[in-house]
Length: 157
Image (cartoon, rainbow, N blue to C red; front, side, top):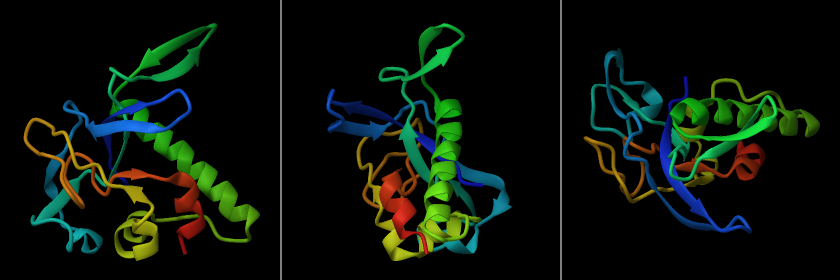
């Protein structure tokens, strides 16, 4: 399972990122029951699984828009970011199929341990959740950061 945290992303009308910080209401922290996976051992100082692995825009201050029945509605929350990332993985798999590559499969070891794949994430270094600050490199609120999906699709081995 890839854990998706949240950011508060502000972008210009032409899509340029103006700011992005860890979303204060995003979940993050250490598991109480799952052991530390091998692929996360170099990034966290914990004996248990740590969340998050990556982050996407989630704040209701800068919401995602969705069409529900006949209306456009704005929403936020990691409950929207997680399925958005699942959709991104579906797009990545379509790209890979078109290029004669297999489906992604188990993503976590690839994003943590394969240097070129890891480099496709934009590090979120500001903001915090209630207990954890964002910082340089992996952190609890935003994990490895926000993915560049096109680069991720092209880089996964």
